[in-house]
Image (cartoon, rainbow over all chains, first blue to last red; front, side):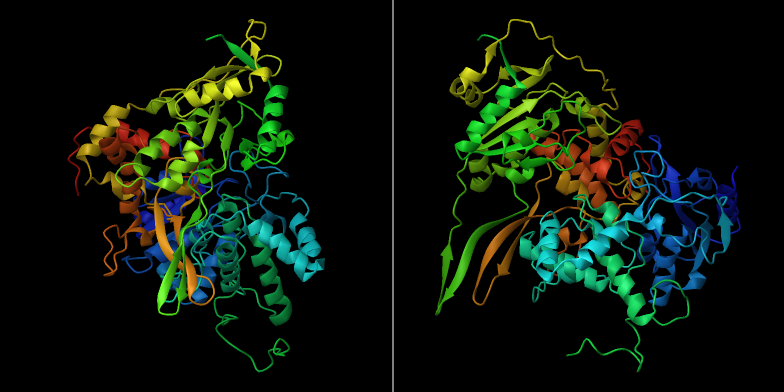
Length: 287
Length: 344
C-alpha cells in the first residue's frame, strides 16, 4: 500500500478527518475527484500526473455542515487556494486536515500521457513542487524538466498590442463563450452564494450569450479575480470553448505583484490585497 | 432507385454552389469543430474523428435569440418581431449521434406550443449525415437504439468508400430533391470503390429497459447521494449536448426605454434553474440536480415522448471538468437490483 492511501486510511481511522476529498481512478483510468468517507474508501485514493483538479473548490460546499475536520489532498498550487480561502475567512485552518502531495507536474490533456508536450502552463513556472505546509505529506518528490513558459511569450505579445488590437483579440475569444459558467464553478475563489451575473434586480450583466453579455461576464469575472486568483488554471482547463482565460488572471496576478508586492494564497497571516490598504499604496491610477 | 456515389471533390463543388446560393453550410473543419464555413476548402469530412467538442444544435437552437424587441413610445410600448432567418441551412458530415438529436428535440419544441423559431430553421435545413468510424470509452450510441450507421435525422447519408468517395443514400423527400438538384455531381455506383471497413467495435454496456425500470422505481434511493456528489454544477454537459434543450426567457435592456426579450440556453445543473420567486428551491443540492439530469434523459423524456433524451455521443463526459462519466453512471444503475429497498 502506498503512502497516500496509508496516511488517509489512518486519518479516517483516527478521526483526524471526517472525510477526505481526494482523487480516485475510474475504470477507464480517468483520475477524478472522490470523497473517501471510510478507511475502506481510502484504498481507492490515488495521485498521479493526471490528478488535475483543484479540490479546494469543494471546500466552500462543505464548510458549514460538517462535524469534524475536512481532509483534503492538495498539490502546492491547490494549497494556495486553501490558504486564500483561509485568508478570506471562508474556512478555518483548524477545520482542515491537509494532505500535501509532492507534485512534478500535471497533464494538459487528461486522455494522454504526461510528457513535455502535455504539461499544464502553470507547471512550467511552478516554484514549489512540495506544498509549503501540510498536516501530512505523501508522494515522492520527482524532478522533471519543464518545457519553456510559452504563455509568458504570448502575454508579452498581448502587452505590446494597442488597446484596439487587444479589444479585437479578446472580442474574438469571448465570442466563443457559451455561458456555461464552468470557469466559475471550478474556481475555488468563486464562492459567492449569489454571483453578480445572477443578480437581476437590477440586471448588472446581460445574462445572454451575446457579444456584450459575454464580454461583460468574462471581464467582470477577471476583475473579481484581481489580486485573488491563485493561478490553478482550472478555469481555462474547464472551458469547453478553449478560451485562454488565464491570460487575464495571470496578468492581474503579475500586476498585483509588481505594483503591491503581493501574491494571494501564499501567507496565512498576511492581510489580503483587496481587504486592506496602505498609506504607501500608489494612487497614480487616480487621474 | 439506382445506387449513387460521390467524390469528396464533387461534394466540395456542391458546397461551393450552395455558398454561392446564399445557403448557410455548417460543416466540420480541420480543427474538428462544427462551424459555418465560408469556403468549400474549409470542410474536412473524417468519419474516424472523435465527435466535435460541441454539437451543431446552436444552428437550430441558438445560445441566445431574440423573441421580440420593445421600445417605449411615450406612454405606450411598441413591440417589434425579430426579422426571421429564412436562410437555408445545410449540415454536412453530421455523425449519427448528432443527426439523431434533431428529431428527438423536435418533439419537445412541437409538444403543445409550436416553436416557430426552431421549426423554421429545421424546415429550411438539409442534414447530410455520415457513418461513424470512431468509438471510445465514452461512446454508447448502440446501447440506446442508435448505431454508427444510424440514419435517423439525416436527409442524405454518406458512407466512406475507397479513394475519397462516399456512397450516397437519400432518406427523405428533401434528400431526394437535393440529389436531383445537384445530380451532375453524383455518379452511378459501379462497385469499383470498396467500402472502408470500420475498424473499431462498439461494445454493449447496459440494458436500457433495465435502467428505465430502475429509474421508474427509485426516485428516492441512496444511489443518488453519491452519483452526482462531485458535480460542480456548471453547464458544460448541457451546452455541448445535442439533445439538451432547456432555455430561460429574460428581458434585457439596451439603451434607455428599449430592449429585447431573449431566449437563452439554460441548464438543470444550475442551482438557479429551479429556484422559485419565493426563495424555495425544490432541487436544493447538486445530488438532486444530477438525479434530474439522468432521469430526464433516460426516464421522463421516454415517458412523455417515447425517446431517450441522449444519443450516446459522450460529449458531456469527455468535457466534464470533474470527469463525471454519464455512461459509468448509467452502467452503475444497470448493475443495481431492480427494486433495491435502500432508501435512507
